[in-house]
Amino acid sequence: MQRLTGKEVAAAIMADTKERAEKLAAAGKTPCLAVFRVGERPDDVAYEASIKRHCERAAVECRLVTLPADVAQQDFAAKLQAAAADPTVHGMFFFSPLPKNLDEDALRALIPVEKDVDCLAEASAAAVFCGSEGFAPCTPSAVMEMLRYYQVPLSGRRAVVLGRSMVVGKPLAMLLLAADATVTVCHSRSQDLPALCREADIVLAAVGRPRLVQGEWLSSDQVVLDVGVNADPENPGKICGDVDFAAAEGIVAAASPVPGGVGLVTTAVLCRHVVEAAERQ
Image (cartoon, rainbow, N blue to C red; front, side, top):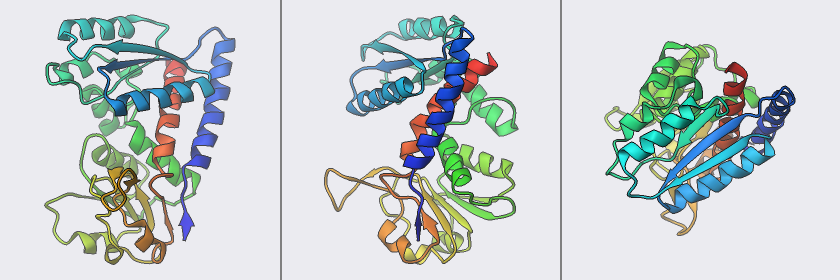
């Protein structure tokens, strides 16, 4: 079985992104991402550090804005509006979920489509759905980059997406349809999930349930992309995906591991989106 690792994919994206960013900088426009963090959630802090490292490697300026957990709605909104109006800021991003005292949907709506590099606002999701110019969420975009890098054919092939969230499942289905795949979106009420998966050419798991996809769900010649990131119930302190990777190894043609797969590509895609936004603006 071929292991579809993310390291090589991310490296290729970062090299291309840096070259494009440096070209823009030489012309007087340094690509810039404004990152907003509310509070001190450990996962947000860790992801912020990863974004900062990637931006530095990609020659992208990263402006960090840290706000207290009890920040008022109008104060956060003012920060977002200032970045939206700033011509030197090309991409905007904030960590979610936000504290319950904030109206997250209203804050997402303040990010202009042309600067919404992780598809936070409904207007950006509409752009993805309609196939117009906008940025898909970084994780489904990373899945598509993985498929492209490993030259997995999509046109006419049957793809099963497990999960229907607005973060991964639905936008991923739209991107696959745009690549001419025949897409089935499955969820908790879908009947006979194992059979649906076995019939697919490509299985994309994004449900957030550790090792949901077992060996009997899979068949030979399949390509499996695992987007799940879960606390591993069998190995405390470690993570695992939505697919039983050990079982998949003996069955499918190719599969991505967790960790080491799609997750490594997501932040590289974020940097690329910032540079693309700068090129367009």
